[in-house]
Length: 151
Image (cartoon, rainbow, N blue to C red; front, side, top):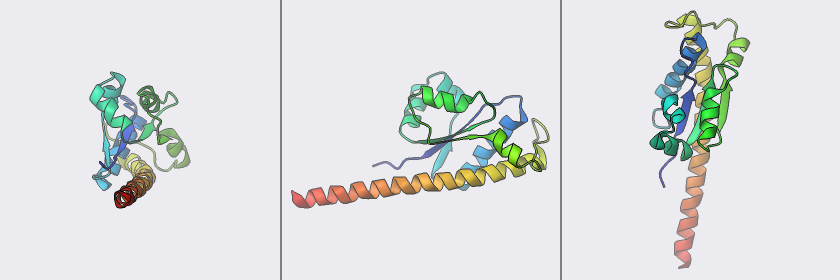
């Protein structure tokens, strides 16, 4: 059985510093868990790309939305997938007022610190989802072995 990955889907948030924080958070988390996580362009899901939709349906998914429109989460749900975890970046920003993004292109030290804070939470989620997947995979192997022994 192929091991599942955790897809991290950030909002596009083009033109908004919080969208840049969302994307930076995803890149930060993936750099720390490259074997267990990946991302894809939200536009692929929005356009209904069949390969993207298939990957999302067959793996875990965490969304990171920048605003109340929840574009990342909604596009995952439209694909028929239930999101495993969903986060609102603005909530992290509100609870970390000392970690404020400076601008759109360069979010500055505060924005990078906010990205790191959020990525620490996401990494724990990745580890938990992968751990649960490994348990399910091991249970299937044990079940398969016991079925073989009864034949």
